[in-house]
Length: 158
Ligand SMILES: Cc1cc2nc3c(=O)[nH]c(=O)nc-3n(C[C@H](O)[C@H](O)[C@H](O)COP(=O)(O)O)c2cc1C
Image (tube, rainbow, N blue to C red; front, side, top):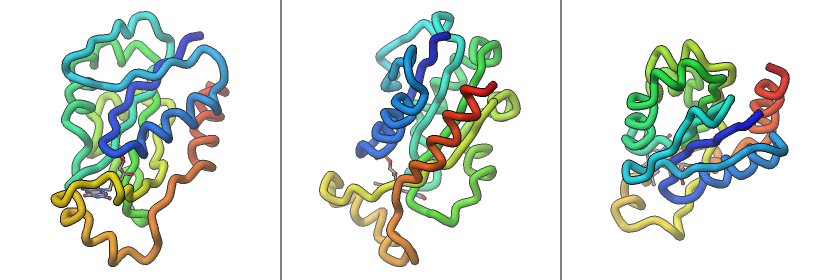
């Protein structure tokens, strides 16, 4: 059984979650950074997990594009979907439904919100300004490693 984790990460948090998920899933897992310039043959995989992060309310366009252009193939696979963002109070279902095409969400075996991180050291000025409201968050955002483990367990048992 081959599994692909296709992800996009602006400042490294989603990549870290993808790496952790790869470790939790065990052997036979590959990672692929989504980019419009790079193609991958999804037919080679039994399971495809797709993840991205929320910026200004939406998931990276490249993730959305990847899902839409590969939708037909993805609907024949076991699929997992995850997102990262800074708002710990975010509604998980709402976020997943907004981030991914409806049919893919309906078809997904597992979906989850893995928390997030504010990587201020890596941000440019605009990104710092855009995440100002984070200062008003009750709790510092963090990656939820337990959620990642649970997500891996659901996929392994499927
Ligand atoms: C410019 C910018 C805009 C962001 N906008 C949102 C947002 O609208 N909602 C939210 O919950 N998190 C937002 N975040 C937080 C990110 O989703 C969070 O830091 C996430 O962990 C980033 O993952 P990445 O490093 O893989 O891109 C934003 C972060 C940045 C840098």
